[in-house]
Image (cartoon, rainbow, N blue to C red; front, side):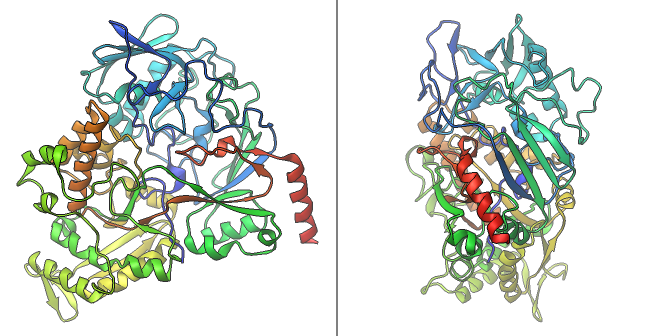
Length: 621
């Protein structure tokens, strides 16, 4: 049974804009009277690495360079511009762009110098100056200038995907200072996360885009300043990146021991089953598995038994993303919370996990699972103080009960759950007419459609659909191609989909786009659920302006509680680890990064590669 998980709000992996997800980072404390000069950006000044550090602890600084890494992606792509709503960006495209600073993958929320070698933070936190490295240059040899930074910011804010407007909304002015500095001024100093969000601003070349339409899709290889360049493109089928031998930042501490593979190629497959078989046949080298059945049984064969294919489990210390059947609240059918609560009884996770998922998954109950941010028990202390002003505006259960999605055990069966569901539906104005549930006022039957792009989701949804039939509800599954899915999602033209909300250990401005009222009406936003709640809006702003870690955690937990009891989606499941299979030509550092898979730290053992290739040829004969 395939039980796929997603990367980004129900969108396929190729939609992920990795330089934007998880950017909940904050500023560092300083001592200067007018400005705190810091070499990086950290949550509350807790840098792991000192100013003169040589490399990250999770890399091999002596890793050899060379070889090819071939990977797969599902679906298709039709653009090399990942910054706008239009089109489906190519997998891996973020590798060609550098940002002002870059994250460490073994700290929860810390950035270190890249294009910007330092930052001057005003003592009132109402502005920050990024000082550019004079050596920074694009891959055509032209220097990165303050004009490029200003143009990138303004263009992404005004013409980029909606999330940029939400991230950068509190910036009131951006201006050049001298030959190598850019100053950002904010509405006030309350948005503590904003300086570090700007530290992950992708810097694009103004001159390159001067005669090009930034808002259109393109298959022309854009100019970047990152560790890789685009070597070749077969539209919709494959893309190959070549390591930039003259990469300006290759010797910076943040890059030592990384980007070791000369060539990285992504091949596209329409079907996950075909993609797995292609991997086993040696068509590509490495894959992260999301299907419990495939992980348990799909890799068996001579290559695995002979040790040519390795399977490894790598711990994932990030908060587990909330994945679930997401209601589109823009549909009148789902606007009553009792209806949403009732339909949750039709998803039998325990049966699915036992019979379909090989017992591999954990039920998701929190929007911040697997972290200290997850709300448990009933609110007390600071959480209760935060929530009390909202009594009467949020469900009473927020104060009196711990949220848990329905669980079917020996003491609580599916029959019990459906009885509770029907009672809720009756309260919401629905009743049976024959074998069909109909609206008491209009006589309209209860019908809706589940939208997705991945056929594997059908196997997850079908048991859910069958149980819904017992409630008199008619649900159907509609699977479309990736391009159509993107269009429908961008325009909110769906009833239900499989939504996912990835979270960092330091949530902040991205919550505006996930759950904020303004994002609900913005085409292409990640508020796929259509949430419009003044309470949630206020909680999000409080998270953004949190002054201490304890304050942040308390406010995130209160947001979690309100989201849970809003029944905005039906929680599904998550994996506690990364499942990775690869042909045995790769080597990796002894220490893995805590908060990332870290493929950019792997390297190729040339002798092992030759041995693998020889054995492949021998098997073919």
